[in-house]
Image 1 (cartoon, rainbow, N blue to C red):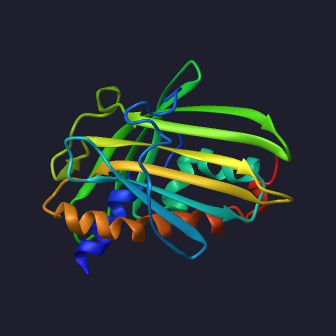
Image 2: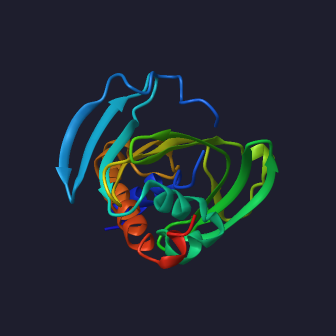
Length: 216
């Protein structure tokens, strides 16, 4: 169904890496309510003040080291090869420990969506390997201008947290709050966002099997 595909696009809008501090509004650890568990992924959501759209969190295991998983997420220019609906993805510029990436999604049955993200990365040692925190926020003014026929995304923030979970295993936490625009009702978007999150986890789980990502 069309709304399912569009909702999957909505969730993917934050799929790269990400701003220096954990999102402060709201507290990243507060207010989550369990939704369900399926496909080895635990889904939670929480309300955002002043919005009918919810923020979503998914926690699941990926069968590779945290470094290997991060290598996949860091391979931004390859997203058109394996990430859902991605038509274009390129790095605009680098600035300190951050970089800016432009992405355009093409779901086919609705208008293309595009946006520019400010992306930064942090890591620290933990038992069994490294923890990686990638966090993002919109930075449309640092990217290309709006294009005819392409809908510009106005809300997009989130993060990936990758934690070692044993030999060649990673506990991955993905959070996203976004509005992909268009006429999809918020209620349907909130329900169907789980579909998009599942697609993201599937894409990363499959891609990390490639030998090139296991290299340091």
